[in-house]
Length: 443
Image 1 (cartoon, rainbow, N blue to C red):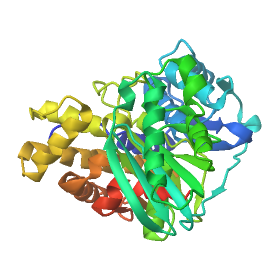
Image 2 (image 1 turned 45 degrees about the vertical axis):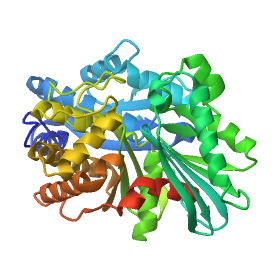
Image 3 (image 1 turned 30 degrees about the vertical axis):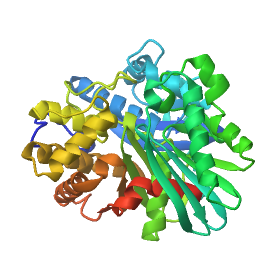
């Protein structure tokens, strides 16, 4: 690392821990995460039997549970572990524990009480996979909309041809009136509709968590009070589509990034990562299926440095949002003494990209560090996804800075056997910026 000398990749810790624990006296540590319809993901491992290693075992277990909650998603976490470890985890993820945000959010998303349940090996639940076939189709008259935290993108597509596309800066995370969001989204869609003979379908790519096209959680509306969220935000895309007399499909922007990658590469087994206001991700397997996971990698830990930056929303440290988004650019620029112009994060990112285009060595160092962040994060994510291909999208990956991120990440990945076969790519600049809106039209 050129700037962040204290970066401690969670991947290296996990790799060393799991190697050491298997060669020592150990006890089972198994985790199952259950979500809607009984879909369940299972991760099997071990912790040290030696109580002198209790703190190390707890750090491993707590970060793993944290990872699975946000990567897979679920409201009931089954733990097969020594009693002392189960009790600590149960307290940590309770309404009064350090991870109260995680528990409360899962309760809100799945509309079910969050629970940490202790079970022994004989009663441990079996895995139950969800497979959602992903069929892309750009025939007909379709609107694609991508709602990011710094800009929104719209595309009008007729039989696969993009007739109109636009990218507009907005400030959704600073506005507490949902009418602001509603009016601008509807205005964009009406503009796109003016280029089409009709509207056969609207596809929406949007940061956040969505169930049945409903907005369950989204940082775009972080300032909106809960009562207004329930009444005016939850069904916003459904309501706008109804006004335009068209069916709508809403997907997390990370899933749409993966979809865009699969469309471009002509194959699945791809993790799409949108690096913008936050970090969004999605995964399509080798058979072009989605798995129904949350893929909220912004909340997944990547750094074990105890002095790591705090995520203001969750209160946790070392999570992806501070490493693979515009927050990372700003954080690293400040650390290296690079003064960025602008009042908003989006303006500061643009300033950093102008510096790197000019060859400013401090700006180059910023994007180099982000490339290292990305490489180690991908090595950790691969433990759970098993992907081969990675597509980078979003404003942070634009221009010369994106090229530096890509080249640096590739160099780091080549140092590890687990990373040498990962195919990492960027779409062309136009697709990188508005590609998700076009891909959304194919939903």
